[in-house]
Image (tube, rainbow, N blue to C red):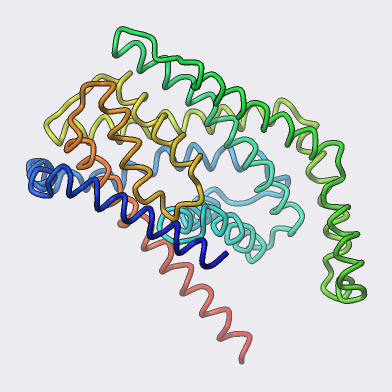
Length: 324
């Protein structure tokens, strides 16, 4: 797995370098310099879509957690997925750990993250559909193809299959049995046996609340749409303004691409290729699309690095207290 992660990272980095060299670094640099420091406003503006996403996640937690604390956990989780070579998985694990450190029951924390992954997939599906409609409106011509419809159908099928499996498959109870057979008494000593048995019930309980799930998806979708403001404003500041529909189309289809190719760490090369491809549909020059992507990555660094540093300090303090 470590070798695969490194190969994926090299592949993504190579694609990013190739795209920049093909378009010309000077062209991209000129676009960024024309905007200047105003691009730094993308950092605080990112708080809005994250807050909307956190409000959706909060609905899935059956144990009360402060909004500020949950916002910080979400910021750390996103920073892990966006900046570190963890293939969009490590952030979820860190999120569960941080909730547990703050006193949330491990079963409650784990079930909320598991269902939130399903909610995120549903939100991305709806956002992708909205993006296709917006791109069609911006171009004045439909962009739905047989391949696109097939892809949407596959995502929908995955959502349905995972939902059915979680509701009726007793997935974590089966995992408990496998681990008991493998680890024997060690599973009991780690306290995992009871938690895995309870996790199925907690997940089914959340899935049995369609109103709560619908509200969480609505918050998720609103956060994704709000995130399109980043694309809309950045392109205006780069001197290539587009309409709101085009900005939503760019953001949604790029997000879909990045989540589809999730195994490339930090989406290196994937985000850039997605913006270039969708930008061409909307008449956006490739150099401008790459400048937009680099502006987004600047925002990810400035928003995410402080969150990771804060997490590291928390972990170090915890280790120090344990050693004492």
